[in-house]
Length: 271
Ligand SMILES: Nc1ncnc2c1ncn2[C@@H]1O[C@H](COP(=O)(O)OP(=O)(O)OP(=O)(O)O)[C@@H](O)[C@H]1O
Image 1 (cartoon, rainbow, N blue to C red):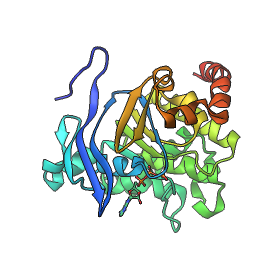
Image 2 (tube, rainbow, N blue to C red; image 1 turned 120 degrees about the vertical axis):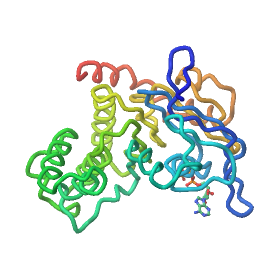
Image 3 (tube, rainbow, N blue to C red; image 1 turned 90 degrees about the vertical axis):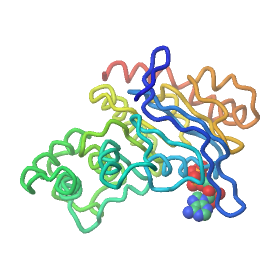
């Protein structure tokens, strides 16, 4: 059953998560909630376990201990069939994009629709073209191969594939890495616009301060093997911690914060 806080439905609940690789203890009794329809930014220094946390939640890594409840179900306790049903409610966009290079964009996006939704190839490719348009790609891109496109277009196509099965939660691992600042800002706006239109939640691992300030409803900071704080940016910024001070109040943090009202206005106009 999905629990509610005062105003929010908790759709993912991580409790007491422990992950270690040999002597490297990455997570120690980590707790985190993800709310319905929120964009949750997950930040922390390199190697603090952001990607391992994402992989644990989506079932690609089996934790050493702790519980992960998704839509009220504990993935670890489910049969393979039940688990696939839950996993179909996720969309995942990895940093690499992970499109099949030998398939066109349309074929890439159609694949999960054929495999998981059992659509005919014709219907799946039709729907794939709709998804590619949804993420802002021009019609002529659908017949192209990933190698024929810019990094920004590949990111959008990967997003279209992550959205193929209409997920309730979208997991993004450093989605703006490798994009130029204009492409990154456009991608940030796209995520907010799609979340507003489609109502999914977003679990967003990022190092990009501009992304945090322009997209996130809450931010979770990973430090010392746990979630140090998970709250609105104003609360996170005010948390007394050396990493938070350096990250949010260093020159890049101050610049991103200063740019925030401009971005908020742009978002407001687009929405
Ligand atoms: N399969 C694995 N085998 C051994 N160690 C691993 C494995 N996966 C992750 N690690 C280790 O776990 C730690 C956390 O890795 P993770 O990729 O989650 O960090 P991160 O916070 O996402 O880092 P970054 O910001 O640099 O991407 C690292 O020390 C990494 O080397």
